[in-house]
Length: 73
Image (cartoon, rainbow, N blue to C red; front, top):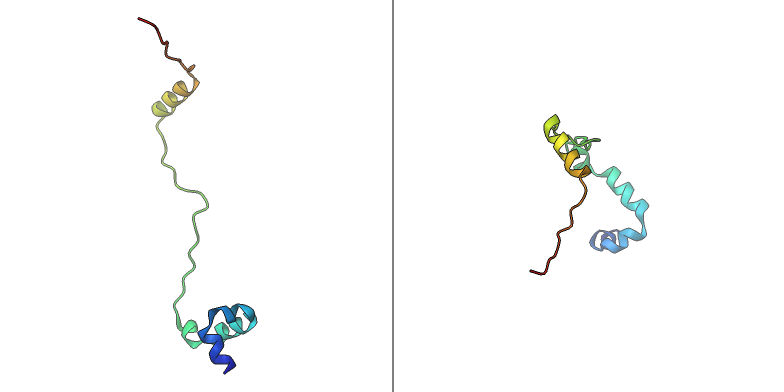
């Protein structure tokens, strides 16, 4: 009865994590699964920006901010 209640109640499984790990190790169905190791990319691939665009970006970033004049016409 104890085993059946553990399988049907996921909250009971949290009370006995060692039993869960043992069940995982004994599981034939899990052992038959094909597995693959997928690793995330350490560095995302960022496309190379041409020198002209890069120079324009620096020029815009370095330019002083111009505040619009509000006049009374």
